[in-house]
Length: 635
Image (cartoon, rainbow, N blue to C red; front, side):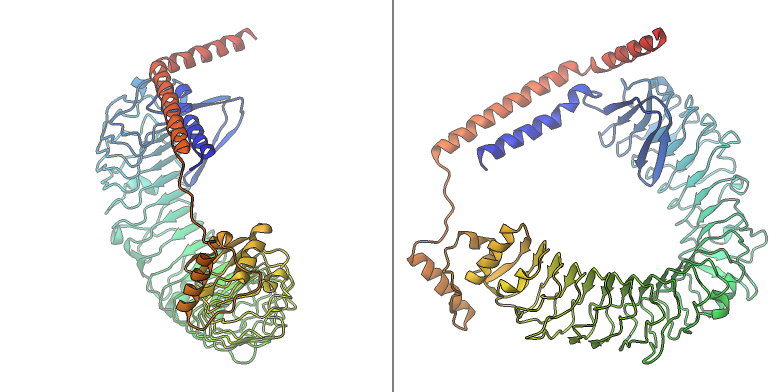
């Protein structure tokens, strides 16, 4: 490491320690936000808005604390106490510390097992409470009564047994309750009367003990064993989102989802068979339907056609073999279909699907053997097409109708030849992946005519040689990957025709790093191109070529790879041109020692300042805040 590098390290250490002097001491990091009438915070999966002029937030996360620390600002509104060692929340624990102005409290990932009845006393303005990942089993009946404005509560990952009236009538503003992964066997009765927006009770053991009659907009109840849709009292009229994944559903031939407002329905891994179709009969407002990983082998046009607002259809990992070409003709809003992992009998002739609105189509692992110009003729709006890991052998004019195609994934097929004009009509194509195909690169003509292409991946394609004109008609490539082929050498003229190249990856090839490879390396460095390559001869990263003095003309190598390496080494040693790193001089060692002593002294001074000011920062903060308020009153 040189002197400048050492000084930079010292500077970074000092910069890291300075905030400790002006913060909340050595325990927490406090910061104030002034002068904002509206402040947006993105925390975890939730977004909070603060409409206050001055807000204090205290970050006490992961500080090995066993209790709520003293000395925090009275005006702290957001307190992070997560990832500590708290075990017990006693009565008035926050009020006694002067934290009555809290509106967000994070206590997740502690070891809390006991919460006393008045633990949250005085927190009338609390809106967000997170208790995930603790050891809570029971809660006092009125523990949340003081929190009149509570909107969001999460207790995921606790082994809970909840009483029937755990959420007091005063918590009338409550909108979101998260109690997944809690080993629940029953739910409080007041859940059926609470007007929630979001209820997450997934990954419990509720099974037959639950009736779907919650007046909520979003209900997540995945992985609860058995859900009986025929139970008396089942009511889904207010639901917009219903997640039933991972459950065994019980229903009758005439059972339907009586959910006129339902927009998102997730039924993955529910052991559904063909008789599920009637469940969707009355769900006419559906926008997203997820049916992956079931035993479905037929989708009825009469059912799908009624879902006129459908935008996404997920059918991956079923047993679907035949789809009627017109099954999606009536779904004018449909933009995404996923058929991955179905053994499709893809038509050898004729159109596969008629859907003018479809933009994203996924059909990997679908046993597709051939694509013709008619296969995708009536899906001309497709932007992303994924047909990886099928049995396609050649690419001709099958994509000519996809004028809006942007990304095409063809990895893992059996493609040997690609018509150079195959993508001439795809003027918006920016990414093409052909990795894992036994490609034959033409010796005289350009490989592809795709002037808009930015990203091209040709990994694991058994390529041994790249002719000079291979990328002539793809001048706007920014990323080219040729990893894990059988390329031994390549001429710089291959890449000089690519005007916009930013990333070149040649790793995994048995490269002979002679003067030609050094030319490519120098060209990459000169044009700011990020290049990656590992030499087989001599072994090592190709960047070592910067320090080797090779002739301008390519070296003539014998066939044996081992002898090539030896000849190169002998030749360089004879000319005494092998690069050897210089050992640090004694002067450099003394300089390093002096800089180290200076850095240690600076750190010691800063630590002394921190310790001396530890008990003064809060009083100063309060005095400045008091002065600010006096100024406002005077004004």
